Image 1 (tube, rainbow, N blue to C red):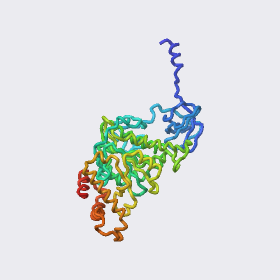
Image 2: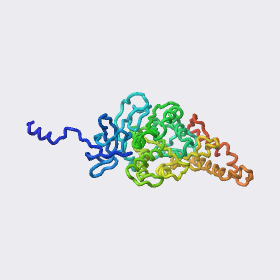
Image 3: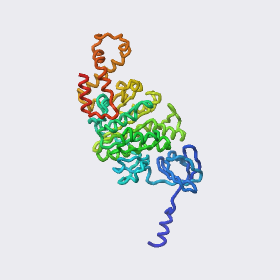
Image 4: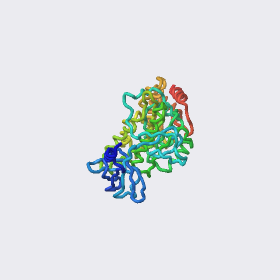
Length: 434
């Protein structure tokens, strides 16, 4: 190539990496000039003389500047720090090498078991399954908990919420479902929980067995961006296995902490607060995450359980309300039942599975309906029965409910280390209801 042609070609190229400069640092955001990124781009922030590197995401773009929300904390950042665009975007390693491992939202191992091998990269943010590509949910998904299998039957690809106040037993029920579920792959996201709970959940709730399980962890001391994208990272891992024809169990604890992380991000960026201080972006974000679960034609399925922390046992909480409208069913845990010693404390009358009729036999559905009716009669007349004001023979159905009361309450009880087969749970329910 002639020298003048080479000089002309090189003259159009930038031989040094382009970088931006930090011009403002606030409590939860960094303002940068000198680059032209898009919303959602990932950047590397190099701090001054020590060259410490951290990552962030572009969340606001203006004509002359843009705002970055950091994945780590902003301590150490200052005006003049250099910012570089990460051309690969926000991706995490996925693959069979993740099975049995505990990772952070960026796919980095935190279990001390060494490097994760045999992985490929996948984007964290993906569109949900297209409506017309979703498969019909017509197969039972057994979870090994008889009150759920019998009275709130789930299907492969269904999305359910577990709603409860603090200390009622969400984590215990999660452990029962993970150990008893008929799924070859299990992905668990622990978002915004106490760091102490992570090893406890592994040892106590999972019995120390992480076989065929991936744990994605973002604890309460992580930055809001890490807590937010921890949920999306876990969903991307589940989608990797779903694309290979696997039926995946996805569990997330909790949606409320995830929403609180977005609330921190949104308020720092100037979004207006609405109900309970949540900005509008929170209500937009929930379906973007939850709708990624489901059954896809030609692929496998993701059956998802999302726990929702109901503050003060208030089911009218905006996050609980929005979640119920998106999910295909809800399992409500009752503090009152724990006081009576019924574990897991599932309030059958306030819970529902929208797809139970599609995956259950006629006898099963009729038995579940009768159980609900008799149990409802017991609750309505509980005071009369306790004070002896009800006389046997006045109501045939109530007489039957009183006769079967102990066996019905026994059906709702299950030890933490028990695992019931689906057929056994259904047959006992049908036999009990006659």
